[in-house]
Amino acid sequence: MPLIDPSVVDLSRLQFALTALYHFLFVPLTLGMTFLLAAMETVYVITGRQIYKEMTQFWGKLFAINFAIGVATGLTMEFEFGTNWSMYSHFVGDVFGTPLAIEGLMAFFMESTFIGLMFFGWDRLSRPGHLAVTWLTALGSNLSALWILIANGFMQSPKGASFNPDTMRLEFNSFLNLVFSEDAQAKFVHTSIAGFVTGALFVMGISAFYILRKQHREFAARSFRMAALFGVISSLAVVTLGDALGRLDYLVQPTKIAAVEGLWQDSDANGPAGAAAWLLFALPDQQAQANHFEIGVPYVLDPLIAHSFNTSIPGLITLEKQVGPRIQSGIQALDALKAYGQTHDPQALASFKAHESDMGYGFLAQRYAPNQDLGQITPANQDAVLAQAEKDTLPNVFVTFWSFRLMMALGFFFVGLFSFAAYYSLKNQLERHPFLLKLCVWSIPLPILACEFGWITAEAGRQPWSVFGWLPTFQAASSHNLGYMIFSLIGFAVLYSAFIAAELYLMFKYARLGPQPHLTGAPESSPSPMFAPAE
Image (tube, rainbow, N blue to C red; front, side):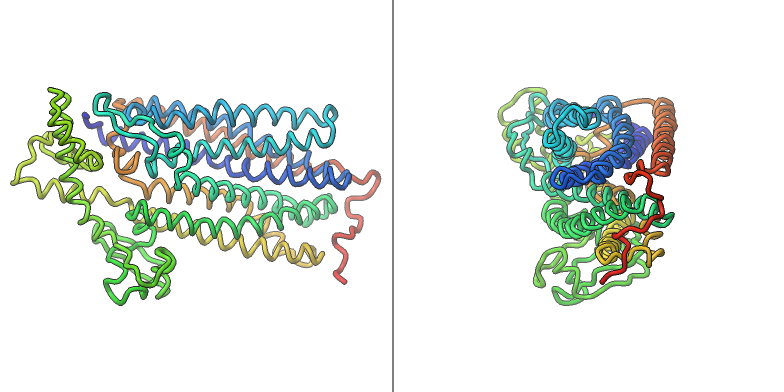
């Protein structure tokens, strides 16, 4: 495969990263709000209390704004695979396109249809009928996330496909292996529950704003309480399931986990197994392959990652050295594949099959071969080529290390915030704790930041691969010219910034307007039993 201009690859990566991160500003709130709306309406149907219907309708209005702009920012991303990542699309389009097609044809249309019924069917459907529509909307939004994360799971841990040397593509061979990939399922659960945390803090923060201003007090108190209880469960679950996802990455992508932990040497290199410190703070130095200013907690790393005190976790230096034989095997695979493409010699095909699983590592070497021709690798230059290719197998350690720690710190912060919020809400003492209420308001954007840091950890930690172990990112891009990439990057940045400005304007506008007063003729500041002193 011919190599693409590195500047074009970098700009393609930057453009996709920006569009994905922009889009993901809206996704978690959509995932979380749908289930909160379904819970509120369930209480309304069971109790018949009008306030819960008003809660569902008001928070549904804010959800609709977020959903509409989320759809607008997400549509362009699927086209980017064809425009900016054409080699990727050719190489894995047979597999990758399947879950995306199912997402569009089933989940997205299901979600979009039921959203219309949810907003315009209040006076046309029975209470149970409308409740069913709301739950189906929540199901549709999360099914949409499922299929997208199945596609992403294939990039992280490719299953359900085999390489065809005649077409030079990974081709679909097992729908079940694709769908039930452990990475896809673990990431779906973790991402969806992170969305629940986002939706819960959004509702709780705006409700806290009303309580501080003594507006819509009964409405705000009940919304706050439901969101706080929902948030306690979700935040505990997201931390617990994050550990399970980390354990899976340790087994499938050891370089990612070593980068996440800033682990250069093996965990038992400086002491007995189980004694390694889990780093609270460090400044990883990729060039020196070491950390500066380490602060850690001993005897935590091994049981946290390997769930054992007797397992040595390989460090980045070890993993870099271990990959040398795979690169040499990959070079043999590509040489055999080239020979087979020219002559269709069965012996060349057999040689390729013997080294097929290492083919992707051969691409890493091609980048540094003389004239990018693997045939020109000789005993005199082989060591230099291998050394450079080995270094490329390590992700950006500083970015991966710190994006993970920021995400994790925010996760534990949410556990504490929701716990205090739920406790004081249940004790009817919220107005006695204005700092807690203010903290809830200030924290509204933090779950979205945590989700962004999570995606940075997952995607930066996967590098240098677009499909782990098979296709390096620098091989996956389209061969555009530099001017086109700069122009399209600026265009996307301007367009998406306009979307965010529209989202913020509409959200602030309708949040400040608040719900319609649910107690006709009652003053906004009238005392409420929700704020009565605890007995």
